[in-house]
Image 1 (cartoon, rainbow, N blue to C red):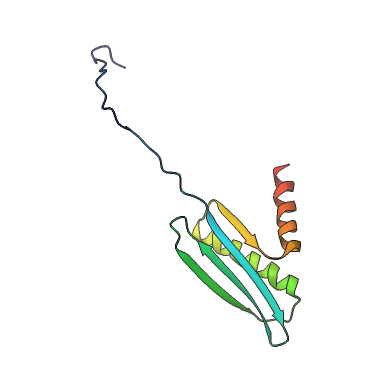
Image 2 (image 1 turned 90 degrees about the vertical axis):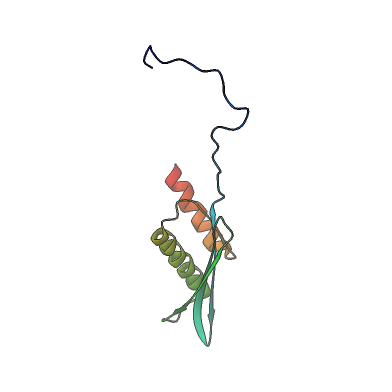
Length: 109
């Protein structure tokens, strides 16, 4: 600080600077394999509580676990495409969630 500057002690009695931390995006995914077709769905919820829903028809016969996995992959690809930095992920497949937790943990180690 230059010597000719004076230091003022006269500050307003209020916040000078504040930062609002928004919650993370939320992604919900689900997949289904039935005799009449396979599909996946992804729902994004923004920090402002806007809801974006997507449904995907899978073109090949597959198991329910594969359709769940496809939903997760598609959701993550969409997340990257939207530039989302932080996201909570939820799904109803214990197998896929355990795999996701294992991959995340192994990358942190």
